[in-house]
Image (cartoon, rainbow, N blue to C red; front, top):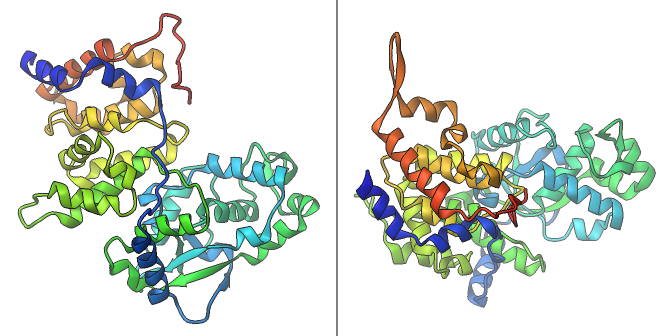
Length: 394
């Protein structure tokens, strides 16, 4: 135990550990700097575009694609803020219909439907799915498009007050303020539709997403969680038969769409985090990704959070997951509390041995994990004397 804590302490300085939480920031914009890569993205769009040009598609027929935002669900709170911005600045039909790209669902698959249904039902600011199938998944303007669906369904809202009746979005209220927006709610947006066959081209959809944002002049910032999710997927795709992941190859693949993340000083440690948790095929990264998508999007953390978490032993993935969840959600005042309150019921079951008729006994993992995290709480986090939460506001 002492050796483990000593190794952990020597692998990350106190200054680095403190900086992981007191200055949360988003990663830099995912832009494709190499013109050849941009040309490649445009070539992919031309190659896989369904004949017939731009298509008007009803909002209910387009969901957000599983490959968009690296599988992180949309933020209902972001939709609420976006509608408030539209309320203040007006609805620009031309802008809303510029650069929209969606991809056909794979024949016979209901992955899009399940992904969207599961994500929306968990967030009261996202309209539930009202169809039996989703033929298309969006790669761009996903939050904007979701706003149309939210209005159509009378979804809960809080900020766009003139678009609401009795605390919910209303088509009638929208029409009284912006007839153009109400018409878009009914008609939908114009889309460039790509064939489902592009789903079989590794990295193609991620490349198009990043390149198209640049072409459209969108300053799209991608979160640290998106970088981790994308790197995890890359690790899966480049792993050899023995499950070994080539560091340089993984870095080169990430650099295609997220160059600043690939070239950051934390890349090696974040890469280790992905490998430690089994990349995206294991449940741990998927659990973290879904949690951040549904509950943690109001806070950004630095890559160093994942870098520190990745230095914990691979035998305690539930502790690693809990540490990341805590970084996204816990008030700063709770960082000196017992860590167990941030574990889910499933995680807790993994940390104890139940003896019938006897109080549960902590496993070795529980003791080790609690010791490591007590060190993290008490030594690595610089809590201000005032008790304020610094820049760690949710």
